[in-house]
Image (cartoon, rainbow, N blue to C red):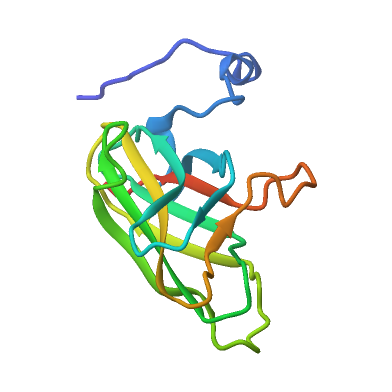
Length: 184
């Protein structure tokens, strides 16, 4: 027994013009695609000479997919006032919901984000990048906070972050948070 199946004819050009190529739905994005990206800056001058964590940059993102990874990139230029010994730490914390990042889970730690030793250690500033990948497994709002604290100091040294590139009206301290589509 033979069965014949036929479909009505259609115009391929018309079908292609009906497709919207301007925006691919999130669900159709392949694994490892960037789903969203947000940037945050130091909003006002920040300075500390304390061993207590100081929040420098805070940012929030709400993942589209619970299987996504969150990539956090920091580009910072800490300035160490004075010329005596100074060692400053840097860390990134993640909290669930707005206002919970400062005490949240530590996902990155750098003991010597900035280091200078002795009275002839003339280094005053250095640009550094910190990168962390997080897998929070949620679609709730996530808050990421970059913090610093001073490990050792002498002569009143402190660590400083400027909001405007030291009076040139351009940000020099930025945190970029990206949602990367997971494999599942």
